[in-house]
Image (cartoon, rainbow, N blue to C red; front, side):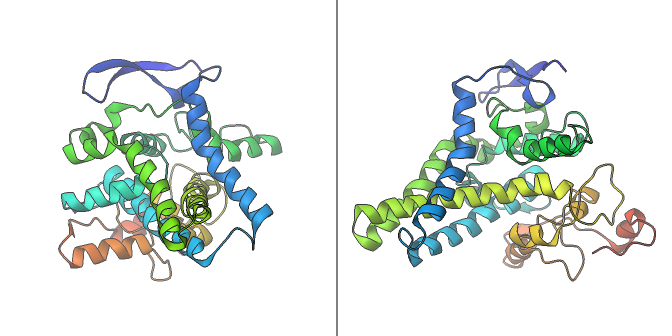
Length: 325
């Protein structure tokens, strides 16, 4: 299918011709392709190298603590910030909360806010059909077709998409928010801080260059790799493995393992059934740490207008004879 061209906006709000990369193909690799591919593969490669070749030699408790804390806070930046707040407007909040969540989302190296939200809105608009940027179901039904689809949905779509360009029409509301635009324009700064701060902490902790390098590797690159693959697993495995209690026009699944790992994002069929809901774990036995954080913000007056799912709405979409677990 040929790439589609349409009028979109650059960061100054000026109309430009734009290629919607997930609705067509670009041939060849240019510098932007390589940079994008690097942000996807380098952290994962580094993580594998240090685990396989240096476990017990090049790892300290402080490094794992930095990795865990950074992954938790960065994870909330994606799940609560990029996803539920910016993409779906599942709740409203104060400007300073937007800034904190936007910066935390930026340190995950998953792309600027407008790009991320535009892609995710396209995913919901065309879920598991042509136009979905990361469906695992568009490469045929053979074994290798399913493998190709899984790889595409997991990281291939972003590694070879060409750039962080986005469909501005889908995120015009976000672009008009000066706080979000300010965060988006400084994405590379947040990426730098997400890598530099662990290195600085590692140096301050040990007083050595080796400590700084270890902080950079574990608190920086390894953390990024873990967070990226967690998000991508929802895109890929979350559309192939798990339960589907609700009627949706796609193959989204509820997956408890991904829900725990992804701070509640693994209740993916719930989310596709009720995309505006701030709560993804809509049953008492479905843990959702992201919604727990949103409720805590609401308790302290920092979040309001939380969108939720009623029992009647659940009953209307629930498959006959299926328990929503």
